[in-house]
Length: 208
Image (cartoon, rainbow, N blue to C red; front, side, top):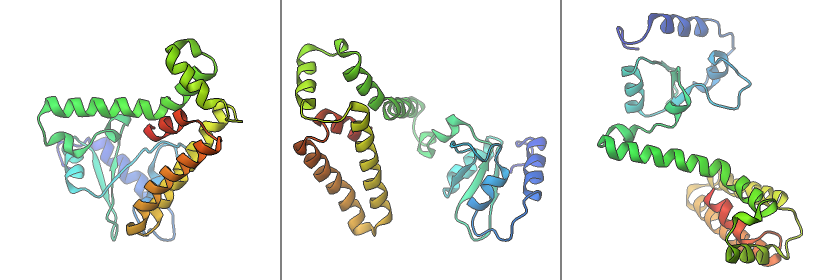
């Protein structure tokens, strides 16, 4: 931390939580996250983990505390907020107008990723009158052969794409990206031709 910028009460709280850890071994900084965060059962991150020195320095200058663990490339930064998690180090390197615009785009696409499938399901299932007539006919024609409700259809595609993404991350790099991209294209096309999912939903899940 930087003395004179970080609050003394925050520094003491971090030290107190670190002293309270009782564990046999700490192989990485991720081991201690669950011991120091406010709510260990939350699905949302409460501690920022980063291996970028510039991001750590930026947070120290804003009054936060960094926790460095021996033999770990990741530094823990506390405390953090939702908006801090959405910030990128590159935002500080450009002019404020462009950085603000890119940050707004980031929030927009976060909303799209969260809401787009559910909006598609809601519109196609309950509020068809919101769609233009030509688009409604196109969506209805593509869903004509699909045997599943829109919710089941969306869940199948979301899980399939997530499985492909995970496979791409875990496989060796030369074939990982190929498997994820080609697999998504092939499975998406095959699923549409087989009548398991509709073409508009493949587009929605791909954008998501």
